[in-house]
Length: 79
Image 1: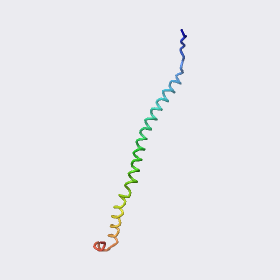
Image 2: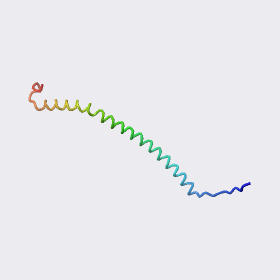
Image 3: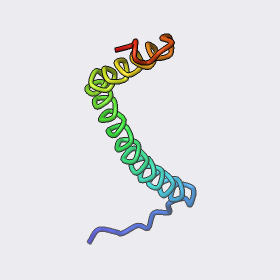
Image 4: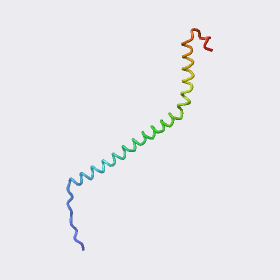
């Protein structure tokens, strides 16, 4: 029968192990939340790039019409 020895593990080692485990869990949760934010930011950038020409055209047209109306003394002359 093999002799069984009881090994003493220092309290500092136990606390370090618990601390590192908790730090790992917190880091994983944080990365998961940041990952979601980064994915939403990437989706927003894709929509911005895709929709910019569509939104810019009516704004440019309406800004040009408003500018012509301001410069003409009579609004009927702008047509």
